[in-house]
Structure formats: C-alpha cells, structure tokens
Length: 440
Image (cartoon, rainbow, N blue to C red; front, side, top):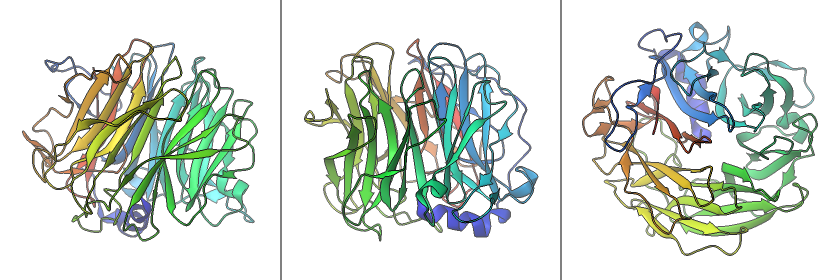
C-alpha cells in the first residue's frame, strides 16, 4: 500500500461490493503449466488486495494473508477493510477457515482501541514452525506471532506507540532461521527498524536508518546465516516525482546501527492513469533474499528516462558490498514495463527465484512472471507466465489481467525448493479484484 490507497479506502470502500461469499476452503488442483506450475487459484470471490505468503521451512504448512474490502459484512463490526489470515497443513491443497487479524490500535498517549481498517500484511516462519506477522492497524505498524498455525496470536507490539509518532507506515519483517532474532522495518516518512532478540517478546527502540528528506518504503528483508540482517528499501521524493533511489540497509551488530548502500537509481515512474491511483503506484521497487551460504540477491526495477517503461535487474553480493554488475532479467512493457519485484532463496546455495508483473502483452493485459537460478545468477531459467488463466473473472482475458491490484505481492520457497506466488488482479486501482496464488 502506497500512501494514497488507505485514504481512498477509508472514504470509498463501502461502495465497493464483492461478487460472492468466500468458500471455507479451496483446493490447489487443476491443470499444470508445461513448465510445472499449477494453474492459478483464487482465494475468494470477495474484494481482496495485496496478499503475502510464507512456507514453513521444515513442514508442509503454508500461510497466507490478504487485505479484504467490503466493510463489516466481511470484516469485524465497524471495520471498513481487514487483513485475513489462513493456513494450510498440506501445502495449499486445502485451507482452514480465514480469520481476521487482531485490530487493536494503541496510538501514543491514548488508550488502545479497535482499528477501522488494516493494510500491508507480511509473514515469516521459523524453523520450529512459529509464524511471525507484521501489518498496519490504521497508521499503527504492529507485530504478533503464533505457535499454533494462527489460532492464537501472542506478543502483540505496536511500533507507533514505541516510536511516539503520529503515524507509521509500510512494514516488512525479517527473522533468523530459528526465530530468535526478529526485525521489523517501517517508516514515518524516514526509515526505521526495530529489533528483538528474544523471539519477539521485547523490542529495541526503533532506529532511524537514513538521512535526508525522502519518503522510504521497506520492500523485503532477510537474515543471513552469520546473523547479518538486510532490508531492501526504495526512497522517493515526498511529492512522488523525480528519481527513486534503491537501497540495501544492513546491520552487523543485531540492529544497533545500520549501513545504507544505494545500489541503483530510477528516473520518475510511469504515471498511473487509473481512477484515484496514487502518483507513486508504479514507483521503482527492490526485493532481496539470502541463501544458506550467505549470498545476497537483490532484484529491482528501474528506468533510465522519466516516465519510460521499467526493466527488471538482478545483482548479487557476498556481504552487502560490493555488488555485481546488474543482469537484465525482463524488459517487456507497453507503458509501465516490469514492476513489483519479489525474490526468494531456495534450500540449496545459489538457488534463487524472482517474480514480477509486467504489461508486455498490452496496457490492459498484465501478467505475473517467474525466473530461477541455481548458480547465484550466472544462468537464469526462461521466464514462465504464472498468471495462466484467461477467464474466470471480469478482468481476465487470454492476454492477461486488466490491472495489478495492489503495489505489492508475495513469494516464498519451501525446503523442497517449491516456489509459491500470490498476487491480486482487478479491474482498476479502485477495484474490485481478487487474490490469486500458484506454485511450481
């Protein structure tokens, strides 16, 4: 969620109507791509936006979150839109009933109350199977964890109260493999990161990581085997015009201090012409992942001329500096080009996957694409179209879907090397749309 989306939702969401009631469970069966992917499956027929997904490293459990619009009829009373969580014990063949995440909001100097809306879910799962989550209860970035696959959530923490701020925005989460070290990045225009070294029980005071006056967005995070932690963030101007700087922020001392390395720069993003769309909806983004040997791979989108279509690049590093020369992974685009990159690391050293969306099939024909490498990016597999269904929703054709519904989506990889991707498609920025997912 970029800044403008939540304002639009608070004013207009009750006018957006879902198409049907969601099912209690869904299957992930269906025809397979020639490249080995399942056909994309829809979470529900409700109006769902900006999902995230995480696979347990050592079991068959899979977890997913999405933001659902439609008011109290689909959320809790007095909520305009909410974050739903669901779990699967069999890698997505069937799903348990969705539940609404804790909406408690605790602004500084005030008693806690129920939030009217939620946004920006992100998930991580430890080797022991504990699920960690961060999201927004209105302008409060919050954290909680669950040891029983999402039935009970504990360790609730409100970062806006900890910062003493008027607002906080756009969280991301990174955990050590065992889950002892937990880091949550977020912004209050500036970039902040808070750390826990006792499984999320207590937290350090948030540390500001930047200088200057840009608006920062955390877009990925990972903890390396040696304990170094890395976040990928974009930094745009306050008016969302001009250049966007893409950075990797790292810490070698458990989050006590942070180093910012700018790895790329993009010119101003192409404009979003959908009704009520924010100026920075198509802003350049960066993602990263760290493999079991400590290699970092970052994937980012950028252009070289203002408002020109963007291209997708990948770079690698052994320790966050220096970085390799960028490898071009995708350059197809009608008006926007490649955007919304995601990266995941596999179970073997050198194994990475990257997913993204582009409008290469036409301005109203977006698709989700995927490539993988087994040798730290020396060679990449051909691009596979993951969004394969040409019908089943009003916004779908054989060429693709009409609009990328949400400026973030999710990808994860399990211990077998299976990739899971989840994203949302819709009619426009205003919606409605649905969350979809697939795996290879």
